[in-house]
Length: 238
Image (cartoon, rainbow, N blue to C red; front, side, top):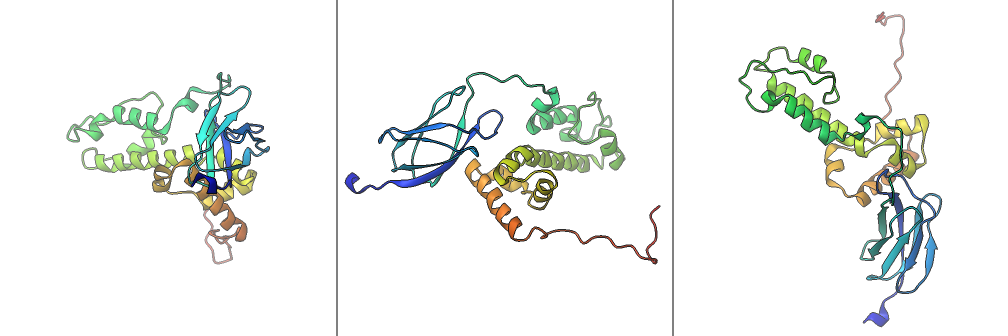
């Protein structure tokens, strides 16, 4: 049966495992045929392979990686750098949404546990769940009865942070080629739900962005708000 196996075209994209940015000029070798390829400047590649073939990915500054071809037509490959690139970053940029959420839960133990306690608010030295704690507390001024409301606000903020963390400008811009105002417009109109972000793998998430981008190109004005037109009868807000 193996004699009847035919090569098929496999396409894909290569990312840096740490930064999640695209990597160009990656060498790809089919271990069965010995054929060698390079991905393009967009980090995309096309190779001929059969199911069961082993593809070897290599690039200076990265550990080699191998991928066994299965039934998928598109591959998403992440290469790990051999050394960490030193970058000027803030401590806050290293905190994931889950880290921040767990810290918030720890600081607000009484909200998530003993709701009957009166002393509901504790100091967290300027670090919160992404929203101003003072603003949150002003929204729920009655301590006991509004503890559940406060928890819902923090949970919702965590969900939004998760979406922002994965649906970020670097990734979306690299896939769509958009930047500036057009990138902002696209990301606003096609922002995925928390369910999509949490329940799709990398391949399906990239496909979601590409599909959304095609829809955006067909009708860039879709989902746009109508401009506010003021006339003589409109009351000024100032």
